[in-house]
Length: 169
View 1 (tube, rainbow, N blue to C red):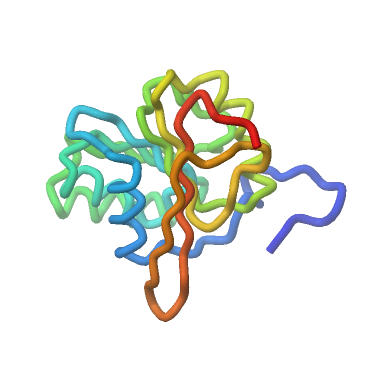
View 2 (view 1 turned 135 degrees about the vertical axis):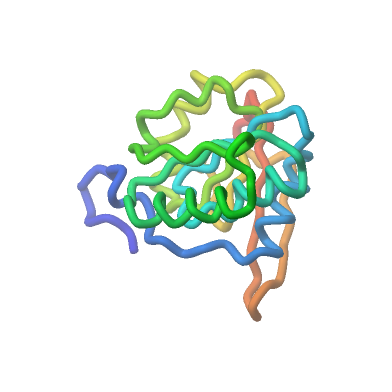
């Protein structure tokens, strides 16, 4: 579902909601080498599964950004049900406007065009050694430090890990 040719990608059209399968979520966070004292930001967090896994299984702090009021409400309810409110924050906001400076890891499952638009924010805000982990879509012009493939639900998923500052292709 790519935006129409010539139209800018906006917060509402960065990607459709397609949840990452749980084995992919786990492998994304493992590939990022997420540590308990670190903060992960999930841009377009959907139902919050990356946030919940980061907080519950990796003991990290997690911040999600999602536009959909329904998805934010559902994710917050799940976080509360699991007792993870002290580790997980979900913002209903446009991910293109969020301050990423506190992030040690940023996860995305967005269209390539969206990744292109986020590159300047990553370069400006993320500290040396921060990781950007993208599910299925490369960040054009950057060379991944690590690439993994995971088979889940009879489909191959590719995980790209970029360490800041990024290496150019």
